[in-house]
Length: 490
Image (cartoon, rainbow, N blue to C red; front, side):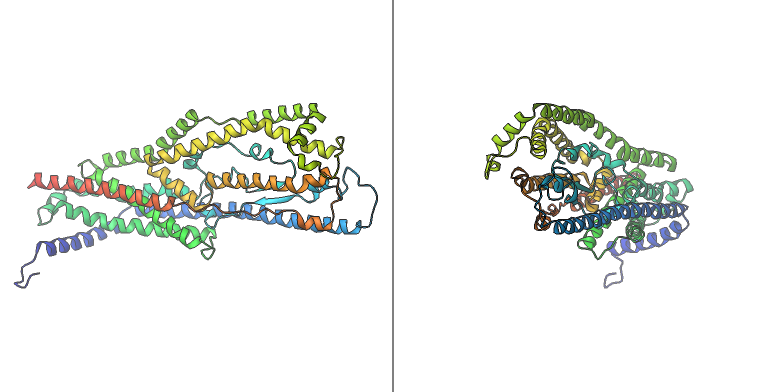
């Protein structure tokens, strides 16, 4: 209001928005779409319970592995202490004083990937990649064999967890709340009456969208916090609160994108049935079709070696190395002359030949494993580059990244395990070639695996910005269209 008591255009717009908002709130409370929200809540509870169960299973397995390792090392130390004064010849089989026996059996250590705080919210690739290995002297060749060569685009269609609910079901709830923003008024015959008042179509749309946007935000926050509560997420864990905040931000941005899309479809004047069909078709394209086509494209352009091929190459290399026998041993010591210090190793020793054979097998299968690494990395880069074609894929990849269950984290873990295997070989092989005794002090000296988390990526922030930018662009186009419609009606 001005000093003269005349209402300004801004004040009229704000007053109109307030009236539209209040009227729309009464209509929205009577919407049948709230039944869909209730179904979403049930889906959230079921998905969170499933994620909690799966993560609890992994944590139990890790605890059991650590307990088994600790008990085994304690038993080994006691045995070695009891025979410390035994000067008899070390037996080549089953003798705990034999370094090769310790390396392959009693003193083997676990390499463990700890679950991230938000792991119960997104199973991701955790059901395909192992989260721990029991690493021995010659175990490196089995790392890839034990894995599934799964394309990272498969993240878009994972198990039924909270990320699945967010990516595939949450948009349907948003569309149920917004598919008939204007069409319902038009079909009921109230839109012309509403526009006969001193209020623009854009103002009506803003009021309707503002209320539904508030509902979308509330659902996103409730979905995340409720899911985290049911899934047993500890927000007090290091980094958990920040990750949960990023999860909420991504979910809100994703919901606003779909609401903006519903707004754009509404301003083109179709019926409610037409709007629903168009929006569901768009949902199918973004959530199903584009990820499937992307998956087909990356596997066609960068096919990874099959698991059968890798196993066959390993088997052939092992047979060839075993057949060469002492020749393989000679090549090994030629490559590792430092192991010859302190005397000439017994070339007939089984452990020494096994180490040499494993070295030869590693070299023989290296072309296959390198091709696997190169192709999988190329697939991941291709998916990262083209994920922007689908908001569903952008959201899924960002959520699994926050949960620590994306492919990249497991592949980084495997590379750390490979380096740890090299560390163990450097520890054991000199003892084996010197035929040294394995004593009590050696048990505690066996290198333990220390997982080093990779540098955190900013995928959550990037995904949120991209989704909000998409929502803003769609809203801008819809409001421009509404302005033209208002001008045509004037």
